[in-house]
Image 1: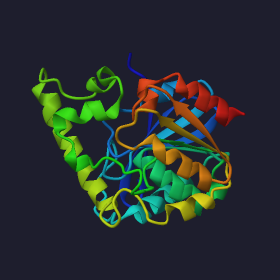
Image 2 (image 1 turned 90 degrees about the vertical axis):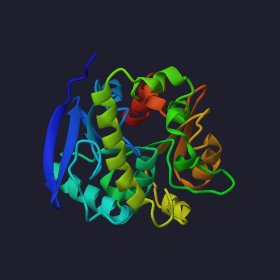
Image 3 (image 1 turned 30 degrees about the vertical axis):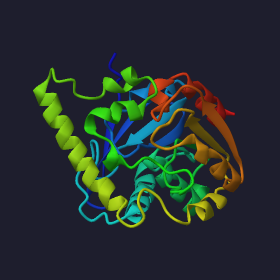
Length: 262
């Protein structure tokens, strides 16, 4: 079933920024990960209680090119400017997934007063050598689905299966475009910041940390480090689940929604 989204478009510092929106209620800003291949349909699971705003990062997804972006600081500025452009009537909740979790952590640390509650789903950014993330460049293309979800059949539907050459060609072009932006964001320290624990310690907002127990990209063994450094956090472990928690366990969205609504 196709999910019906509104499409909002903003010019943010010369970048055509597309925001998919669904639902009514208190706003929730969702920051996606290092690719948009899984789409945003999962947000329907929050739309019964919230107005979910799903921007594509500059140079990724539905948004236009952003050749000026040099590192994550440019992304943080972009999202602060987008918040100004959205001109919301109330303080939004903030959700970040994977690379978007890294972004959300730094954003909430620098501008915690602009957000209500924060949800971090399998967040990147920590770069802890004792709990290393899997190097994306070391994964063979055909093996990626098995790294995205514990039940590989869930991830496979987002990847070309050889039956549609046009889809496969577009998929490759989209991943190359998004990979270029991710490469710029990660050029300095990889997908993270060496002082991210200091950023965490500034986030006094209520935080829900969500992690799939079988995540092969970002190990759930990092979770205790996050919880030690986030002043006001609770943890939701999702058993038998890989990296794409919302897609593999849609029922998790009810728990996330309950946390936001409480």
